[in-house]
Each structure stands twice: as structure tokens, then as C-alpha cells.
Image (cartoon, rainbow, N blue to C red; front, side, top):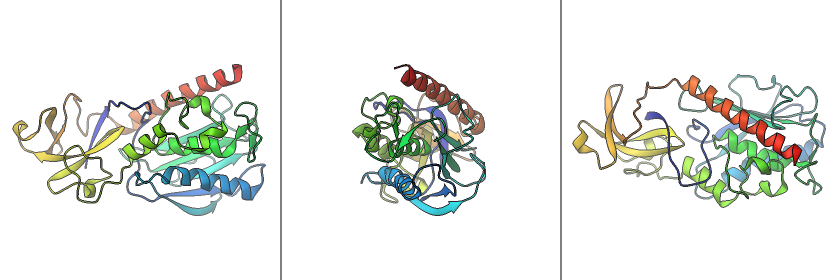
Amino acid sequence: MVTLWALASTAHAWTAEGPLWGEPPIPYWIAADVGPYDEAATLAAIHAAFATWSSPACTSVRFLYQGRVEAPLMATDGLTVVTVVGQGWPQPDLSPAYTQLTAPEARILEADVALDAEGVAWSLGDDADGNSVLDLQAGLVTQVGHLLGIGDSEVLEASMNPALLGAPDARTLSDDDVAAVCSLYPTTAPGAGELGDPCVNDDSCAEGHECVLEVGRSYCSPTCTTEAQCPAGYTCLRFVDHRVCAVGGCGCSAEGVSGGAWLVAALAAWRRRSRRALRSRRSG
């Protein structure tokens, strides 16, 4: 498998924030303390948010619940933990919900999710208006999308639209959200992927092909030794000890960009957008 650290163009309004998870299922834990709300209802909302993203038939995304855990908030400990914070919210200048990815290379290793229940009113019922009272399950759906590496969307009805954070309608995925999760995590049959077919890893691709990872997409492509073996629009790029046909024009290689540096920049950009979205919501 090879990685291209270049932003991929897309015709969809959804965006990709960074690296992706490897093979499913993605394990997740829930913090022992789930905040000030009814515990059973909060747990049900968390599980429902994960199930929302694995429900489209076109995606390979699957999650595996691992149980409750005592863990420091947003700790880099290899565990993907969801926390509803009733006291001690550490990011007062950020969005009421926050997702932190740990991805030193091309794959996400963990992604912690936290919701601010100290300074923000959330609802587990039908009284959320998406403004003064936010829908907890809807907020979690958006954050699980970020956990998967999906960025903001400009589509008005999309769960990944920052303006809909906590709005009840965001509980349900829009066509744009489905396009995002199915493009990034497709259900390509093992060993069947040909040139340009989406892939999860090398096992998704046919013999003589590898899964090429770009930020925002992945596709099967044949190995090569010369430029002439690649189809139009592809370049025979060297990756360590072999070559693979990759979409031309990226000007990059597997060692071209530090994964850690790219991730810091991507997260910083997302946090800036989150702040702007929150200020816009509060001033509206």
C-alpha cells in the first residue's frame, strides 16, 4: 500500500480532513462518567450515532463497542473514547463538541470525542431546537463523522454542515454524508479492484495492483516499471522499492510530507472553522 500526501479533488460538497482508518471494525469505548443526563438514554444516543454511519449498504464502516473505561479526557492512549463532559470542559473557545484524531502516518489510530455538557444545553428528547438547546444524538453523529476523517460540508441538509451541529435533522445522514462515507470506506469486494476502483487496503485490489492512499480517497492502481505501462492521466511514481501508477500532477511521494505535520495543520484548520461556526451560531 502506498500513500500520497496530496489533497484529492472531488465533485462532492463533503471534504476529507485527513488519514483514514484501516480494516474494520473500529473499536470504541464510552467513558465511565457520561455527564449530567440520563445514563441509559445517553448510552443509547452514543450507540445510535455510531450505527448511523455504518448503516449505508455502500460502506464497509463497522464499529465494535468495547465497554466503559476510566480514561483522561482526550488522552493519547490508543483508545477511541466518547465522553460527555459535565464539569471541566477544557476548550471553552472551541465548538461545543470536539474530536481529536491521532494519526502519525496514513492511518487513524484513535479518535476521541467529547461533548461540552457544562456550558451547553443538550437534549435527549424532542425539545432540541438546534440553537439554545442542542440535540445530543445529532451532535454525536457529526462528531463520529469527524472521527471517520470526514470534514465539513456546505450542503445545507448534511450532518457534516457545521451550521447543523446539534440540530435534530442532523441525526439522519443526507445523500452528501452517504457519498462521503461510501467514497472513503467503500465495499469493494476483496481482490476485485481494478484501476481506479475504491479500496480499503491492498487486499481490495486485484493481483498486480495496490491500494493508493491519497488524502480524501483511495483507489486501486497497477504496479509499473515504466511510464508507458500507466494509462493516460497516471504517472509511474516510485515508492521506496517499487513503482505504482498514481494520478499525475501530485508531485509527491510516500516520504514527501510528514504525516504528523500534516495532521497538526489539518486539525488546526478544522478548529478554526469550528470556532467561526460557533460564533456564527451564537450571534445568529
